[in-house]
Image (cartoon, rainbow, N blue to C red; front, side):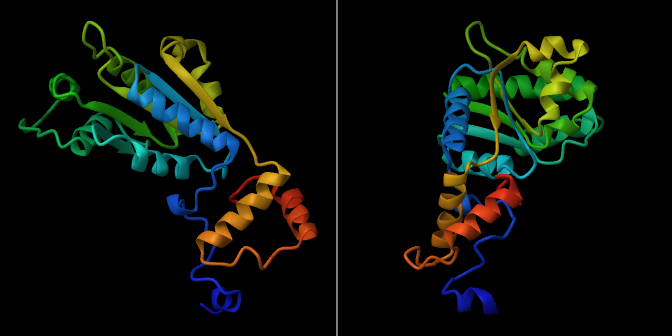
Length: 237
């Protein structure tokens, strides 16, 4: 493309696709990543990562998957607008659990998942279910996720569940009818907008990843202040 060549870049630095290569780890993002990695690898039950639209939740999620230990098996749900049956089918497909019944029920899936998790735990493996855009989950699905947290040994939860969503996810979980699942959220982290100094670093970080020379300032200080004012610190904007 013409404009990357003109500015001495290899590729476009500000595409909005959630590319982990371009993830700028602000202090908030580093803390969120550290919390997620620790909780998935320890005794977390349900882990909640929320943030405004465009703050980098999905990019953090994809970077998280790359950083998890090799001993962690992951089921990733990117489209949570599913029925209960579809949800369990997708989880089993993600974990490569074979389904031998012609017409499996929810109990079939849960029983197979429980056997899988017990075997994985015995082999020293950890299993995580990561659900993006979790604010779109039906209440019935959230209740089923709570039941999945009952899968355990005498000392260990067998499945770590990570819910990633917009701020309304916190409000949904605070509803009285969801008090049981809300009580099982062991870690909560919220990604807010970037501050002015972080916006400066964010812009130069993406230019550097795209092959640019950061010593040749493509944005003046006043331009960066304008970007900060216009975007309100939301990276996607």
